[in-house]
Length: 466
Image (tube, rainbow, N blue to C red; front, side, top):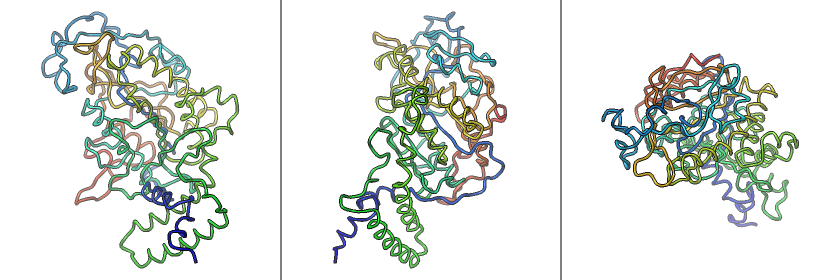
């Protein structure tokens, strides 16, 4: 008779470590739930640029800044206006810095794009720009946490978790919430966690590397056949269910059962969904071959396979979009980052549209905040901009969004959101609305209060809805 250690060693995914990983990650099959009203989008692909991309070098053209070049910030802005930026840096003596790249208009909408995004101009008429976004902090970790969870402190559910909590899963064989990333960000992976929601709503963090499985422990242990594994799993599942039925007040037991069931299904389905060799040479040429492009192509395959919410976290390793002078300088930083991502973003939108998927797939481009209209104080040899949360740009495409739209504006300096300003809470409310979810009704009672993604704020931005 095998020992308990031997028995557990032949269980799901080749080792007990896989069970622990999947149970804690919450890869459980989620029941479908009815939306609050008719959804416009079924899936979300979130492209998050980690480090604070500059609105002034990407999508918010401010030629008027040239007239003020060299003026000190405190000659133009009041002391009150200059409060609230990075507490480690002084800004009063910083000099106004005009955009470092040329801009051109693109598409029938005439949208202004920086020269660093040549391919994005091909799809700009699918995009709705929000040019007067503001948030609550110019600190990286806080800005990332607010964007992902709607709260400034960690411990609250991620937006992807709220979406799966509200809508359940489309596919019974794949996790409903998948994250692909290139490193650990300032805020850490807490921004992908489920907070006080059941554990099955946490993101599954996948890797996209040729010859390697997307999730740990998908391979069988040496000497274990699929049939032998199936028998072990059947026995374990029976024991788990008996134990659960004796302890009906412990819902996490159901989560563990569902985790094992999902683990088994992932062995059959995950590698196929993530297998980019099944794509044509032409498709690979369209997307390009870098890591971000592979993530974009994989994101299309995942939503096509029924994954509800996919996030691509770009620039986390080294906080690549953080355009300080000591981080490569503004010019080199943004030219390199845009060059790395432009092709993949444009290809994703073109590909989704060609397949008839863009209408039901909401693509969101976001960053934690923008950059200041003045350069850094005590700058080094290269130009850099500081953190700026009072007015910046995000955009959305597909999924019920009005293509070619542009809502809001910052002032002539790109400093303040002055026309149709929207908070990150409003963006969250709009994303949920497009998925058929009412952000005020999507809540969870926790510690005697109703918790929700938008806290006690948020309004739907109807002006950019088709």
